[in-house]
Length: 271
Ligand SMILES: NC(=O)C1=CN([C@@H]2O[C@H](COP(=O)(O)OP(=O)(O)OC[C@H]3O[C@@H](n4cnc5c(N)ncnc54)[C@H](OP(=O)(O)O)[C@@H]3O)[C@@H](O)[C@H]2O)C=CC1
Ligand SMILES: O=C(O)[C@@H]1CCC=N1
Image 1: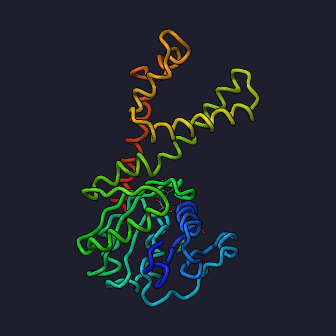
Image 2: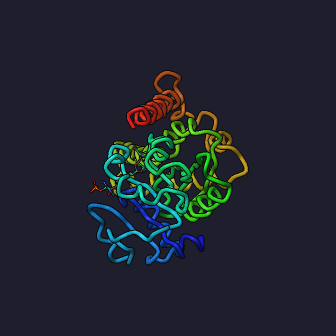
Image 3: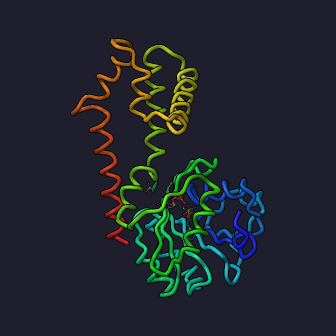
Protein backbone atom coordinates (compact mmCIF):
# COMPACT_ATOMS: atom_id res chain seq x y z
CA UNK A 1 0.00 0.00 0.00
CA UNK A 2 1.29 3.48 -0.92
CA UNK A 3 3.12 5.22 1.96
CA UNK A 4 1.72 8.70 1.24
CA UNK A 5 -1.83 7.35 1.35
CA UNK A 6 -1.18 5.50 4.62
CA UNK A 7 0.55 8.57 6.13
CA UNK A 8 -1.57 11.49 4.86
CA UNK A 9 -4.86 9.65 4.53
CA UNK A 10 -7.53 8.81 1.99
CA UNK A 11 -10.93 10.49 1.95
CA UNK A 12 -13.76 8.40 0.51
CA UNK A 13 -16.84 10.39 -0.55
CA UNK A 14 -19.65 7.84 -0.84
CA UNK A 15 -19.12 4.34 0.45
CA UNK A 16 -21.80 2.31 -1.28
CA UNK A 17 -21.35 -0.66 -3.58
CA UNK A 18 -18.32 0.58 -5.55
CA UNK A 19 -16.59 2.71 -2.91
CA UNK A 20 -17.21 -0.08 -0.39
CA UNK A 21 -15.79 -2.74 -2.75
CA UNK A 22 -12.63 -0.67 -3.28
CA UNK A 23 -12.20 0.13 0.39
CA UNK A 24 -12.72 -3.49 1.33
CA UNK A 25 -9.99 -4.47 -1.18
CA UNK A 26 -7.59 -1.84 0.21
CA UNK A 27 -8.17 -2.79 3.83
CA UNK A 28 -7.56 -6.45 2.93
CA UNK A 29 -4.39 -5.27 1.14
CA UNK A 30 -3.04 -3.61 4.30
CA UNK A 31 -4.27 0.02 4.19
CA UNK A 32 -4.49 1.03 7.88
CA UNK A 33 -8.14 1.81 8.76
CA UNK A 34 -6.97 4.88 10.73
CA UNK A 35 -5.80 6.37 7.39
CA UNK A 36 -9.32 6.34 5.92
CA UNK A 37 -11.99 9.06 6.27
CA UNK A 38 -15.40 7.97 4.94
CA UNK A 39 -18.17 10.50 4.26
CA UNK A 40 -21.56 8.87 3.67
CA UNK A 41 -25.07 9.71 4.93
CA UNK A 42 -25.83 6.07 5.81
CA UNK A 43 -22.53 4.32 6.51
CA UNK A 44 -22.69 0.52 6.45
CA UNK A 45 -22.23 -1.31 9.78
CA UNK A 46 -19.01 -3.03 8.64
CA UNK A 47 -17.27 0.36 8.40
CA UNK A 48 -17.61 0.86 12.16
CA UNK A 49 -16.20 -2.60 12.78
CA UNK A 50 -13.35 -1.92 10.33
CA UNK A 51 -12.23 1.10 12.38
CA UNK A 52 -12.18 3.79 9.68
CA UNK A 53 -13.11 7.42 10.50
CA UNK A 54 -16.80 7.88 9.71
CA UNK A 55 -18.23 11.32 8.93
CA UNK A 56 -15.42 12.95 10.93
CA UNK A 57 -13.55 16.13 9.91
CA UNK A 58 -11.12 15.46 7.08
CA UNK A 59 -7.35 15.85 7.53
CA UNK A 60 -5.97 19.08 5.95
CA UNK A 61 -4.20 17.47 3.02
CA UNK A 62 -5.12 13.83 2.44
CA UNK A 63 -3.05 12.19 -0.32
CA UNK A 64 -6.20 11.13 -2.17
CA UNK A 65 -9.89 12.06 -2.23
CA UNK A 66 -11.87 9.33 -3.92
CA UNK A 67 -15.29 10.39 -5.18
CA UNK A 68 -17.69 7.44 -5.36
CA UNK A 69 -21.18 8.94 -5.24
CA UNK A 70 -23.78 8.50 -7.97
CA UNK A 71 -23.40 11.02 -10.82
CA UNK A 72 -26.83 12.39 -9.90
CA UNK A 73 -25.61 13.16 -6.32
CA UNK A 74 -22.44 14.92 -7.48
CA UNK A 75 -23.85 18.44 -7.21
CA UNK A 76 -24.87 17.85 -3.58
CA UNK A 77 -21.72 15.97 -2.55
CA UNK A 78 -18.86 17.96 -4.10
CA UNK A 79 -19.18 21.18 -2.05
CA UNK A 80 -18.30 19.08 1.04
CA UNK A 81 -14.89 18.19 -0.41
CA UNK A 82 -14.20 21.27 -2.54
CA UNK A 83 -11.76 22.60 0.10
CA UNK A 84 -9.40 19.73 -0.77
CA UNK A 85 -8.74 21.33 -4.17
CA UNK A 86 -5.59 23.29 -4.98
CA UNK A 87 -2.93 20.67 -5.54
CA UNK A 88 -2.08 18.91 -2.29
CA UNK A 89 -4.70 16.21 -2.76
CA UNK A 90 -5.15 13.98 -5.79
CA UNK A 91 -8.86 13.78 -6.66
CA UNK A 92 -9.92 10.45 -8.16
CA UNK A 93 -13.49 10.01 -9.38
CA UNK A 94 -15.04 6.66 -10.25
CA UNK A 95 -18.38 8.14 -11.31
CA UNK A 96 -19.79 6.99 -14.63
CA UNK A 97 -20.42 9.86 -17.00
CA UNK A 98 -19.21 12.79 -14.88
CA UNK A 99 -16.47 14.46 -16.95
CA UNK A 100 -13.11 15.65 -15.62
CA UNK A 101 -14.16 19.23 -16.45
CA UNK A 102 -16.86 19.05 -13.74
CA UNK A 103 -14.23 18.28 -11.07
CA UNK A 104 -11.90 21.00 -12.37
CA UNK A 105 -14.79 23.46 -12.06
CA UNK A 106 -15.46 22.51 -8.41
CA UNK A 107 -11.90 21.91 -7.14
CA UNK A 108 -10.35 24.79 -9.04
CA UNK A 109 -7.38 25.09 -11.34
CA UNK A 110 -4.19 23.38 -10.26
CA UNK A 111 -6.04 20.37 -8.86
CA UNK A 112 -4.85 17.03 -10.20
CA UNK A 113 -7.89 14.98 -11.19
CA UNK A 114 -7.97 11.38 -12.36
CA UNK A 115 -11.11 9.84 -13.76
CA UNK A 116 -11.21 6.11 -13.13
CA UNK A 117 -13.60 3.31 -14.05
CA UNK A 118 -13.24 0.33 -11.72
CA UNK A 119 -15.54 -2.66 -11.28
CA UNK A 120 -16.85 -4.56 -8.26
CA UNK A 121 -14.50 -7.60 -8.42
CA UNK A 122 -12.15 -5.04 -6.80
CA UNK A 123 -13.60 -6.33 -3.51
CA UNK A 124 -11.57 -9.54 -3.97
CA UNK A 125 -8.56 -7.96 -5.67
CA UNK A 126 -9.76 -9.05 -9.15
CA UNK A 127 -11.05 -5.74 -10.49
CA UNK A 128 -9.87 -3.83 -13.52
CA UNK A 129 -9.69 -0.04 -13.50
CA UNK A 130 -9.12 2.27 -16.46
CA UNK A 131 -7.65 5.70 -15.68
CA UNK A 132 -7.14 9.03 -17.41
CA UNK A 133 -5.78 12.21 -15.83
CA UNK A 134 -6.34 15.94 -16.45
CA UNK A 135 -3.56 18.24 -17.67
CA UNK A 136 -2.49 18.95 -14.06
CA UNK A 137 -2.08 15.28 -13.19
CA UNK A 138 1.62 14.48 -13.45
CA UNK A 139 3.29 11.13 -14.05
CA UNK A 140 3.70 10.95 -10.28
CA UNK A 141 -0.07 11.40 -9.75
CA UNK A 142 -0.84 8.73 -12.34
CA UNK A 143 1.73 6.43 -10.72
CA UNK A 144 0.12 7.03 -7.30
CA UNK A 145 -3.34 6.21 -8.68
CA UNK A 146 -1.96 3.16 -10.45
CA UNK A 147 -0.24 1.91 -7.30
CA UNK A 148 -3.39 2.41 -5.21
CA UNK A 149 -5.68 0.80 -7.78
CA UNK A 150 -3.26 -2.08 -8.44
CA UNK A 151 -4.01 -3.24 -4.91
CA UNK A 152 -7.53 -4.12 -6.08
CA UNK A 153 -6.78 -5.58 -9.51
CA UNK A 154 -5.39 -4.62 -12.90
CA UNK A 155 -5.01 -1.03 -14.08
CA UNK A 156 -5.02 0.24 -17.66
CA UNK A 157 -4.29 3.79 -18.83
CA UNK A 158 -6.52 5.38 -21.47
CA UNK A 159 -5.36 7.68 -24.26
CA UNK A 160 -8.31 10.05 -24.03
CA UNK A 161 -11.39 10.67 -21.89
CA UNK A 162 -13.82 9.82 -24.71
CA UNK A 163 -12.81 6.15 -24.37
CA UNK A 164 -14.39 6.16 -20.91
CA UNK A 165 -17.95 5.63 -22.24
CA UNK A 166 -17.02 2.36 -23.97
CA UNK A 167 -14.84 1.26 -21.03
CA UNK A 168 -17.75 1.85 -18.65
CA UNK A 169 -20.00 -0.21 -20.93
CA UNK A 170 -17.52 -3.12 -21.15
CA UNK A 171 -15.76 -3.49 -17.80
CA UNK A 172 -17.54 -1.09 -15.42
CA UNK A 173 -20.99 -2.55 -16.07
CA UNK A 174 -19.60 -5.87 -17.36
CA UNK A 175 -19.72 -7.81 -14.09
CA UNK A 176 -23.52 -7.38 -14.13
CA UNK A 177 -23.71 -9.06 -17.56
CA UNK A 178 -21.63 -11.97 -16.25
CA UNK A 179 -23.72 -12.30 -13.08
CA UNK A 180 -26.81 -12.34 -15.31
CA UNK A 181 -25.16 -15.06 -17.41
CA UNK A 182 -24.70 -17.10 -14.23
CA UNK A 183 -28.32 -16.55 -13.21
CA UNK A 184 -29.70 -17.46 -16.62
CA UNK A 185 -27.37 -20.45 -17.14
CA UNK A 186 -28.50 -21.83 -13.78
CA UNK A 187 -32.17 -21.20 -14.63
CA UNK A 188 -31.70 -23.03 -17.96
CA UNK A 189 -30.20 -25.95 -16.02
CA UNK A 190 -33.27 -26.02 -13.78
CA UNK A 191 -35.47 -26.05 -16.90
CA UNK A 192 -33.53 -29.18 -17.97
CA UNK A 193 -34.36 -30.90 -14.67
CA UNK A 194 -31.51 -30.00 -12.26
CA UNK A 195 -32.15 -28.78 -8.72
CA UNK A 196 -31.69 -25.01 -8.28
CA UNK A 197 -28.74 -25.56 -5.92
CA UNK A 198 -26.87 -27.94 -8.22
CA UNK A 199 -27.55 -25.78 -11.29
CA UNK A 200 -26.20 -22.68 -9.50
CA UNK A 201 -23.08 -24.55 -8.30
CA UNK A 202 -22.40 -25.71 -11.87
CA UNK A 203 -23.05 -22.27 -13.38
CA UNK A 204 -20.84 -20.35 -10.91
CA UNK A 205 -17.93 -22.79 -11.21
CA UNK A 206 -18.20 -22.87 -15.00
CA UNK A 207 -18.17 -19.08 -15.42
CA UNK A 208 -15.45 -18.63 -12.78
CA UNK A 209 -13.28 -21.43 -14.20
CA UNK A 210 -13.74 -20.34 -17.82
CA UNK A 211 -12.88 -16.74 -16.86
CA UNK A 212 -9.68 -17.85 -15.11
CA UNK A 213 -8.75 -20.09 -18.05
CA UNK A 214 -9.35 -17.25 -20.52
CA UNK A 215 -7.00 -15.04 -18.50
CA UNK A 216 -4.28 -17.65 -17.96
CA UNK A 217 -4.22 -19.66 -21.20
CA UNK A 218 -1.87 -18.80 -24.06
CA UNK A 219 -4.70 -19.48 -26.55
CA UNK A 220 -7.24 -16.74 -27.26
CA UNK A 221 -10.89 -17.14 -26.16
CA UNK A 222 -11.93 -18.11 -29.70
CA UNK A 223 -9.54 -21.09 -29.65
CA UNK A 224 -10.61 -22.00 -26.10
CA UNK A 225 -14.20 -22.11 -27.40
CA UNK A 226 -13.14 -24.35 -30.29
CA UNK A 227 -11.37 -26.64 -27.77
CA UNK A 228 -14.75 -27.30 -26.07
CA UNK A 229 -16.63 -27.85 -29.32
CA UNK A 230 -16.60 -31.43 -30.63
CA UNK A 231 -17.75 -31.66 -34.27
CA UNK A 232 -21.47 -32.33 -34.30
CA UNK A 233 -21.51 -32.57 -30.49
CA UNK A 234 -23.46 -30.86 -27.73
CA UNK A 235 -21.54 -27.56 -27.67
CA UNK A 236 -21.95 -27.12 -31.42
CA UNK A 237 -25.71 -27.54 -31.00
CA UNK A 238 -25.76 -24.79 -28.35
CA UNK A 239 -23.42 -22.44 -30.25
CA UNK A 240 -25.61 -22.62 -33.34
CA UNK A 241 -28.30 -20.97 -31.19
CA UNK A 242 -25.96 -18.53 -29.40
CA UNK A 243 -24.07 -17.41 -32.51
CA UNK A 244 -27.16 -16.70 -34.60
CA UNK A 245 -26.39 -13.49 -36.48
CA UNK A 246 -29.62 -11.64 -35.75
CA UNK A 247 -30.88 -13.08 -32.46
CA UNK A 248 -27.69 -14.50 -30.97
CA UNK A 249 -25.22 -13.43 -28.34
CA UNK A 250 -23.03 -11.14 -30.52
CA UNK A 251 -25.94 -8.99 -31.68
CA UNK A 252 -27.50 -8.90 -28.20
CA UNK A 253 -24.28 -7.99 -26.42
CA UNK A 254 -23.47 -5.34 -29.03
CA UNK A 255 -26.86 -3.72 -28.38
CA UNK A 256 -26.43 -3.97 -24.61
CA UNK A 257 -22.93 -2.46 -24.62
CA UNK A 258 -24.09 0.33 -26.96
CA UNK A 259 -27.00 1.10 -24.62
CA UNK A 260 -24.59 1.39 -21.67
CA UNK A 261 -22.13 3.58 -23.62
CA UNK A 262 -24.98 5.81 -24.83
CA UNK A 263 -26.20 6.20 -21.23
CA UNK A 264 -22.68 7.13 -20.13
CA UNK A 265 -22.61 9.86 -22.80
CA UNK A 266 -26.03 11.10 -21.65
CA UNK A 267 -24.85 11.27 -18.01
CA UNK A 268 -21.85 13.28 -19.15
CA UNK A 269 -24.09 15.80 -20.96
CA UNK A 270 -26.45 16.06 -17.94
CA UNK A 271 -23.52 16.62 -15.55
N1 LIG B 1 -21.54 -0.20 -8.72
C1 LIG B 1 -20.62 -0.41 -9.66
O1 LIG B 1 -20.39 -1.55 -10.09
C2 LIG B 1 -19.82 0.74 -10.21
C3 LIG B 1 -20.11 2.05 -9.87
N2 LIG B 1 -19.35 3.07 -10.38
C4 LIG B 1 -19.64 4.45 -9.98
O2 LIG B 1 -19.48 4.53 -8.58
C5 LIG B 1 -20.34 5.53 -8.06
C6 LIG B 1 -21.13 4.94 -6.90
O3 LIG B 1 -21.94 3.89 -7.39
P1 LIG B 1 -22.48 2.78 -6.41
O4 LIG B 1 -21.45 2.49 -5.40
O5 LIG B 1 -23.01 1.71 -7.25
O6 LIG B 1 -23.69 3.60 -5.74
P2 LIG B 1 -24.20 3.49 -4.25
O7 LIG B 1 -25.51 4.22 -4.21
O8 LIG B 1 -24.13 2.09 -3.78
O9 LIG B 1 -23.11 4.33 -3.44
C7 LIG B 1 -23.10 5.72 -3.37
C8 LIG B 1 -22.96 6.10 -1.91
O10 LIG B 1 -22.84 7.51 -1.82
C9 LIG B 1 -23.63 7.93 -0.73
N3 LIG B 1 -23.94 9.35 -0.83
C10 LIG B 1 -25.06 9.94 -1.33
N4 LIG B 1 -24.96 11.28 -1.19
C11 LIG B 1 -23.77 11.53 -0.61
C12 LIG B 1 -23.12 12.73 -0.19
N5 LIG B 1 -23.66 13.93 -0.39
N6 LIG B 1 -21.91 12.62 0.40
C13 LIG B 1 -21.33 11.42 0.60
N7 LIG B 1 -21.92 10.24 0.21
C14 LIG B 1 -23.11 10.31 -0.38
C15 LIG B 1 -24.84 7.04 -0.81
O11 LIG B 1 -25.58 7.07 0.40
P3 LIG B 1 -27.19 6.78 0.32
O12 LIG B 1 -27.34 5.43 -0.29
O13 LIG B 1 -27.61 6.86 1.74
O14 LIG B 1 -27.73 7.87 -0.56
C16 LIG B 1 -24.19 5.69 -1.08
O15 LIG B 1 -23.77 5.05 0.10
C17 LIG B 1 -21.24 5.98 -9.19
O16 LIG B 1 -20.81 7.24 -9.66
C18 LIG B 1 -21.06 4.91 -10.26
O17 LIG B 1 -21.17 5.45 -11.56
C19 LIG B 1 -18.28 2.85 -11.19
C20 LIG B 1 -17.94 1.58 -11.54
C21 LIG B 1 -18.71 0.43 -11.15
O1 LIG C 1 -24.57 1.27 -13.56
C1 LIG C 1 -23.82 2.24 -13.43
O2 LIG C 1 -24.16 3.36 -13.85
C2 LIG C 1 -22.48 2.07 -12.76
C3 LIG C 1 -21.34 2.46 -13.67
C4 LIG C 1 -20.68 1.18 -14.07
C5 LIG C 1 -21.31 0.18 -13.23
N1 LIG C 1 -22.25 0.68 -12.49
